[in-house]
Length: 91
Image (cartoon, rainbow, N blue to C red; front, side, top):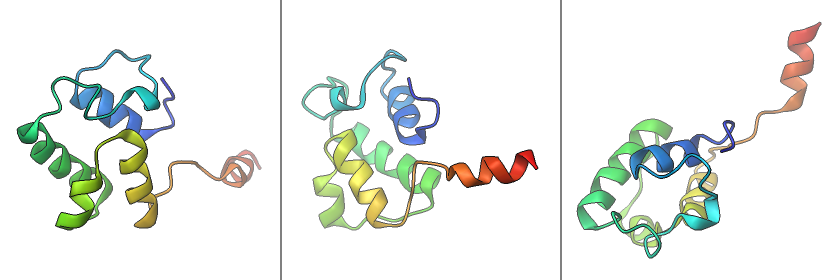
């Protein structure tokens, strides 16, 4: 698993998926435990973890890792650290 991807970590933990699960394997169709109750709990976890809020229209589109990631991106959430920060820390 990519330890630098907090969304992937959240989803694999939430759905109790193997640590080597790839992002493209995470969708409502592919994950048996992703039912309506899990969706409500997942939205709460996403909103709490990333300090964002989703409206109903957005929630209806959150059916996979990619869709969730895109929605978070639109809200200004970035999953990649700027390597310049690492360089500054080394000085």
